[in-house]
Length: 327
Image (cartoon, rainbow, N blue to C red; front, side, top):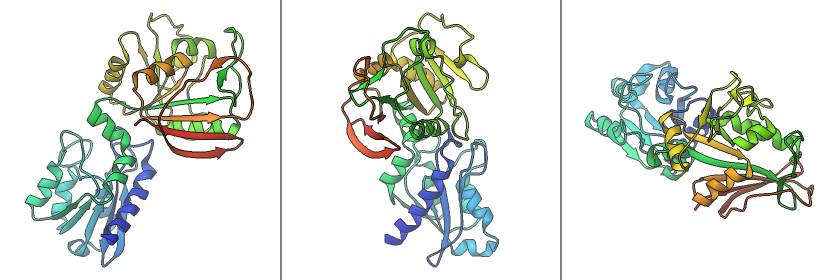
């Protein structure tokens, strides 16, 4: 089992390289192992490109060794035709005798069928090696398929005395709370998630771009709650440098259903305070990322209050980052 875990950890490390580029597909890494040594490895690099298993098999130059290898893969191989052919059929055709899988794929067109196909073809399949770690890595994908909504990340920066902004008029700029390193990290996060959301008041008051200007990567889809469908189309959120979804009615569940229908697996909610509180009050969030800066504001817009389990804490420049999880 130790050997299985060692090679599966390598698959998980490989899979992480696809973050922000493979959605709505999952993150997947794969390795071909013979005699305890990895002969070839791969990962799903970008949506529409080769899956991890295909890349690993394709890299092995001595094809005769495939029949002596064990294939490790961090998620159940697909058995359906999508953007690419079924991975199960390539594994079978390659005469790979053993496959070790971290977690079953929750997608309805797979969901155990890939494992059944391999076993029916005589392939020995071991399932559940580092399953918890694999599900955590693909928490966006699992949430999307199991809960039928995006994985929801709440994010804000607050002063040391727990305010997220000053009280101001629309013509005044928002308070600068967190430092440059925190801003860069926030922009990196934008490249890793499929969508980013603000409320109508934030769109009007701040006119945010919601793009990844401080990090190289793809801009997320911009989502805005515009109940009256009255936001000026000259606002930055309606620019052509990223897709935009305007939600004009219904409750939070209906909004998340609308995003699910658009195949959006993950969502960062960046404000304002009223919108953040709406998600918190409904218990509709998975993760909260909170920067606390050393500066004080003394008065202003109170930061949301949230209860969750602290998963991670670190200093980002002068700011303290805390990551909370719901439940």
